[in-house]
Image (cartoon, rainbow, N blue to C red; front, side, top):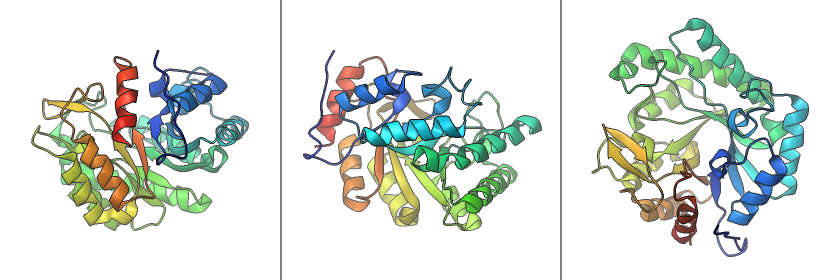
Amino acid sequence: MIVLIKDRGSQMGLGIRAHDVQIFDDTPRLIERLQELGFDHIQYAPRVSLKKTTRDGRELTADLAQETGACFKQAGIRISVLGCYVNIIDPDLDKRELAIQQFSHYLEYQHSFQAKLVGTETGSVDPNFNLTRENYTADNIALTIGQIKKMVQAAEKISGIVGIEPGVNHPIHSLAVTKQMIDEVDSERLRIILDAGNLVTSENDDIAAIIDQAINLFGDKIDVFHLKEYVVHGGHAQVVPVGEGVANLGPAYQMIRSKKPAADIIWDEVMPAGFDRSIKRIHELSL
């Protein structure tokens, strides 16, 4: 197996979703592997990385959050995004309410994990997350923004930060609707996680151009960028190993570093297939 140990003084930091490393319920071993691979910040989802320990993320405790956060800090690894990806507009009203409760619960532990923010996408009116234009209706967009207002109000009470990730499979599905959401929520406790690949609908879409447009529209709100490799099928991006798709990753990476140097970049959905090749390519792109 290829092991890439980063010279931490040679380049900007690198981030990855922790569960893409495929080590679960073993924080010390996960940390060791992240260090070997040269990553110094992560998106961390207890639902996955601590699947058994937290019973799919449902049983998270203050002690566990504090212990885990301290372990990562001691190792020099930041948690950029504490992942709590829930369906905030589930058509089942009980499940919808549980989603908001769980997200609010994670906000309470954001500072224990020493995370920058707590992140989620905005869900779907289809509980199976099939691509549907029903998500784009004015009523469902309004419903979603109303739910986000509740989450932000919870964050405001405890100095938490809500991170929203737009995508074509969700009501917050475009840059224009994202800007609408930002304007209507109107809170410093709302931030954006931008994955331009989630906004792609055609091979002609250029993620560097999407990133540039987003920065022009609401760049002061973007704290985290996701990058991933993909091909386009059925009107949306499908992930493939880095270097084997059509994403314009090099220019996108450099644009972020040029225009938003303080933002974190997290490599997203790095596939187990071809993992070592993907990691090698990630390092090459980030030089």
